[in-house]
Length: 505
Image (tube, rainbow, N blue to C red; front, side, top):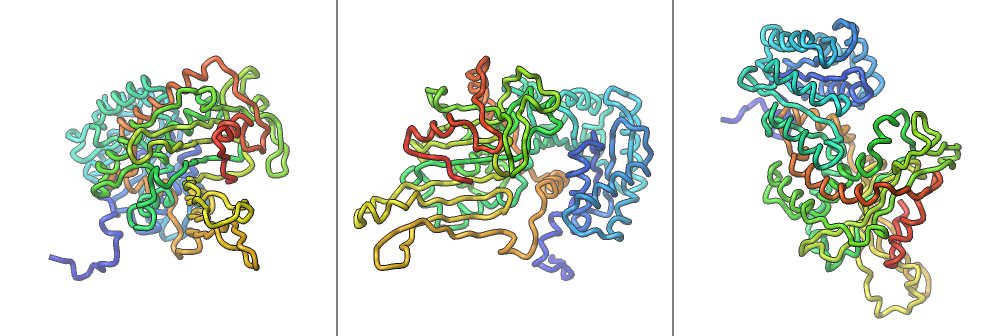
């Protein structure tokens, strides 16, 4: 029987979780303060959290609940997407708790387990809890073992559901990824493990599926008969900041290529799923990841670089070796560009060019589908010399939207053709602003929707692409490029050999 009080146009109700707790390990870190706590406030502001909801912070601090409340309030005020409302915060403030202790402190974890149990009586939460590991990857095993020891990871013991959220990187190669997957799937059930890639929470990334499968305009030409090549770019104008300890052991390929860019490639290249069920989408993405092949000549098709001193946006920028805590002899790459091929009928012969880098001219993430040129039979060569490839560009960030580039006649008496662009921007087309990626993903964890979360098989398939690259690069020095440039010259030459060039992002 339908509820007569429910507006059928209101699609929020199925997206409101059951009463539950969100336990954040490493709650004083940047990720928690700038993303997770603001996301919780935004969800509360939109009416998407249940009345029985508690945020429980765990960190190495001698704090009480009041200290954590103050940190959470400042974080929400500074970084939340939605407007500040005192009445929303007053509802949240009584549901913020803190447990102090280190990860090897059995007493602290016993206290955490007791605190969760007490929520049954105090907040009407019947054992439902999600554990967010906002901590350095080396600490994952210790925290997981503590959750196993105390029974906090066990659905049967808790009497509700228990889920865990693991931040990237998922290991640093295939072997370590398998070990981590085995551990986390052993402590929790595989169904309750959420491996978070925040790029998949972005509206524009999700719109790739809508763009392809809801429109008859694009799908017929989304194949090797019409597509010349695909370029996926993630450029950052910043350096490594205070991340030298992590970044110098990882590099651009492990930090970005293995997760963000390969996930974007999978969404761009996947076949149409039978439904938008999470399992169906992951099945199609996995087929793509397993079909990726590397070129035989890696020296020409796998380029890495490292920025040196230069200028970005009119400001002098240090080189990588001048960054704080970076060894002077470091050969870690801050730029990586590779050509990948997909061995299936749809994409045979279409190169996928992926690039990522730090200290680039500007911040941009985009997917550019470049179509084959028309034969131009009726036109004189001089009329079309200014005409390039038709392009469909999906801008993930910033200025989220789409751009379609095609040829048009220049006004005048001659048949002269030139490229023009039609642009669509989310901010102009829709009155409602897009939710932050973490806002969507935290809500999905609490609901139990795994559509936007890579599973263990996807992670391992991605490492099977990256490991041979890392092995090839081992013991070599990266090419250099000045801060403020679009990467080393060798990356331009990689495309120039086939008559192509990087799109000017």
